[in-house]
Image (cartoon, rainbow, N blue to C red):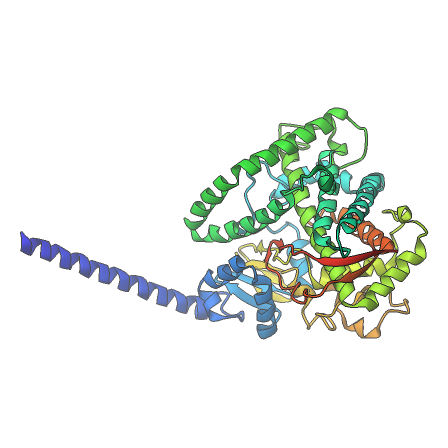
Length: 506
């Protein structure tokens, strides 16, 4: 009996050794194939990244993938292989090849967070579903709609300045965290536009209930990034999803109920004002054949809130930081704003259009630090495609990273310098001819094609009015100890950091 047990033990041990040996041999042969014989072997990049997704995933979870990709492009050139089946490009021509082409290239499914209620938003919907949803709500984002929505944006700009004044009065030295208040202002504005009611984050100091939903949204961005990354490493994604989804279930249920209640109240009021819901009043279609369903409306409302709140907050905070880091640019913006308006309330969505330096500041902020330093991956058809002048084999994942293409030294003069002047008209006396070397075709901060950012005009309207009102009302001075402020991690968006600024009323 003992001999029999010993025999089985040795047999099992031998099988284990053979099994491990076979797996090791498979991995070695697989690695050799991926590095030297795979259809993507011709593209440069680190060998470890060509063999496995693990290096890529490590930096995604670490929150510095955008920085690493920057270094890889500097080392290997405009096209880099970053995974066994994926390349990244910073060729300006790739914008057209990947995002404007017909038929549209599908998104990489691993890059998207599945809708929690089963109803798609514009971010996740594909093909006819995307076309149907966008067609139902597109009129809410037209130039005419924006003109009619302007009083809502301007109302919250006024409340932002009032809240800043209250915070400054309570501070012993006039120093406040401006990033937090930008967050409240953008949150109030976008909830008002998306749900028909504001969440009144700017009034939190009066009620004693500061709003925590903004931080929850940034946590959601981090969670979604990590979850999407780990979907490539099943079953890790299942365990993480169950843990985090369970941990945040109560918060998500509360947010969903709040959104549904507000949307229902807004729809019940009818066509009483212009906001994002105006085009769908009385036009909800639960069939999913035309128009938009009630669940899709709620999903898109929440998606708009999350996206706009985060992007606009990050952009405004960074614009302020860059302006105060170089007071020459601050002085030029202050001269334009204060020279144009006699009263703060004269600063409106309409009156800030065509303010060339203000618009240049916003564009340069978006260029040097895009709020969402992510790639926009698409899957090529099986026959392959020419992307940026280079043939790429079929079924390859290809994307442009919004941050990398906007700060490459091969495309931009002094790419890390904050120079709004590069976006001024060449006839402007403040324009510098050295920026003739910029490849402006690379600058697509809202992407392009039929899947571009539908809310770009709303974002720009908020950014212009909020920033101009701030500059008109206060003199600002950045506090010491913030030299490392730009050292931020990014998960879909850059994580917010307090921006401490001393304000003096003019």
